Image 1 (spheres, rainbow, N blue to C red):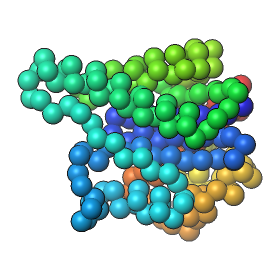
Image 2 (image 1 turned 45 degrees about the vertical axis):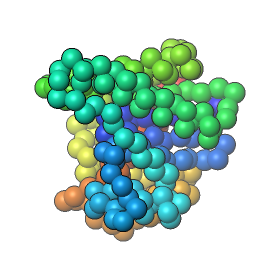
Image 3 (image 1 turned 90 degrees about the vertical axis):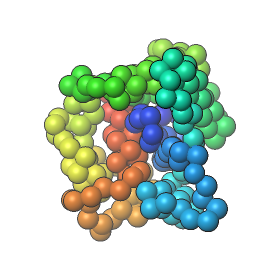
Amino acid sequence: MTHIGIDFSINSPGCCILSDKGYSFISFFNYGGRSFEKKILKAFELHFSLKEGNVIDSIAYDRGPRSKDFLIREREKMIDATNLSNIIIEYIQENFDSDEYEVYLEGFSYGSKGNSFIDLIQYNSFLRKGLVNWVGEKNISVYQPSTVKKTAGKGNANKHYMIKAFQDNVLEDKLLEKTAIWQWMQGKDYSTKIPKPLDDIVDAYFILKTGTLTN
């Protein structure tokens, strides 16, 4: 059995996978079609540093929507959402062969609003459709954001609280303490600023743990 926790966003999905290898952490990030041959932008320095140090895996992708024409852009979004779903699912399939998978997701925060939230729902729905086609709906669990936060210790926890809960290993998870990312984060202060992709992979971890502790 392979357990998969996904913290989905359009530009920076995070993934935590529990398999016979232990925990694996993956950051997918939108690099906007930029070239890294000469210089890595500051926003992506940590992604590359963690990948090169074998702390996590980082997968860069380029979002497609470019047109300013509404009709064309909406078509581009559908293709883009399909592509992002395929990138995530195909990465897992290629790197984590298993007889059975359980996938855990975080539901929507219904206090959110605006065009970006509408886009998030659209992209997330494409991912869910892809996951249903792959593992079946009975192997997918979706949890309220407050439920995931409670796993970390507080139902209204903010990102700083979640990071600290991960660093402190509040679940007393011995497997977590063996991971390179947990060891790398020890002794670091994230009380003021949390660099990407740490918040994404930490959220993915607590989504996964919500699933494994609930089921």
